[in-house]
Image (cartoon, rainbow, N blue to C red; front, side):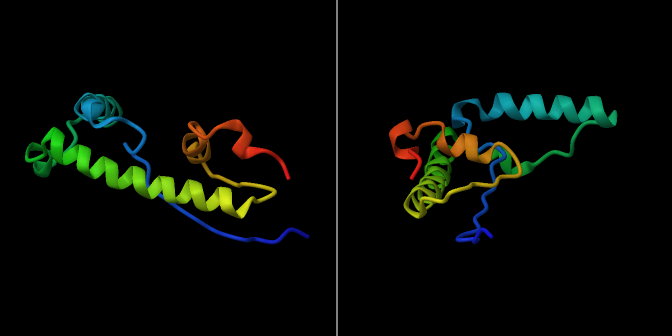
Length: 103
């Protein structure tokens, strides 16, 4: 029987998108909301206070956290990785293949 050696989680709503396209992505998300529900999505007033610089700082913090998760997974060298969505693909998209070698 297998042995669970770790459990990790992260939010990833916009964490894999560069901050310079967040406004474009928000517009797309709002359009999808309106198409689905027939009304405009509620405004998020804090968005108007954001700047590219503040978003880039937040983004770096997020990327640092994801880099930590990536390094932790690599150091554990698990036989199997289980993910409920695309998070694993996105976490490892920039990892050199030789670092993901089988045991």
